[in-house]
Length: 321
Image (cartoon, rainbow, N blue to C red; front, side):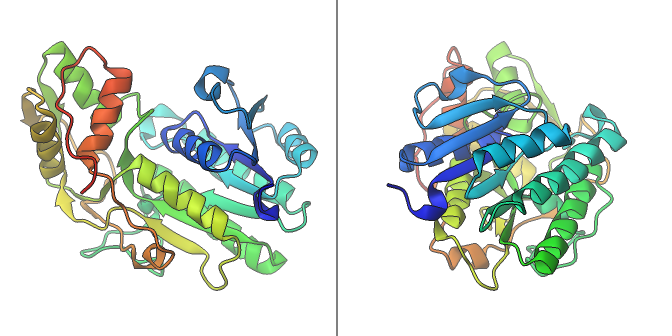
């Protein structure tokens, strides 16, 4: 039997990179935990090998349907990963607010109908204002980045609500990550796609200072917070590598370790609007839980290449740092 606070866990956003890896890690390490996924477009093939995972078709923007799904399942914990709008052009601003703010608050409200339900909200490092040093959890959250601002709004509202209503809330702020199930036009899938086609890869100047982590390490940290249960006085954690490296340095290192023969055309793409030039996590708080990012980023990209671009010839790098 699982521990009482791990009997039933509800997850949103399981089709995304982070949600997918959280579900896989949780499903494999806690096979007795019943995991319910709320998905707008359920894909049973994603988790067919996990007998403890069930899917339910729910659009989280549909508040009555969302509330019913939560109350029917009676979860001991909710891991809320569903979000949209990292790329501002992909979604309208008001739709972004409805999904990232309104739906998040509605999900939290439903959780408040369940005694002792632990609400874990996946925020983002993009909530922070520009810093010349690694961001700490106590730093102000202040950004004009549309996605970051929407997540910051939800972050503030949920923490204020949890304080007022005495609810168990944990806010996790992952920084950049990649690995299995990464896709679309995100950085590393795009790089691997260019390598497979034998085409140059256009990117920004790459002078941004970034903190990139293997997604499986981030998923492990999320599950650790879930397992820990009550964490008095600690309700916000940054999740990242804690390393400050230029984006061009990160991409160049991955290419060398994987033996990718791809021409990097630096400076051909503009910086994204409102993109911070320095975004790095201070991770001393989450380290106090015993978590440490271990996976070599190039290994996470190698896993992505083997799963989504099997025709691409890549060298297997060291798994751990």
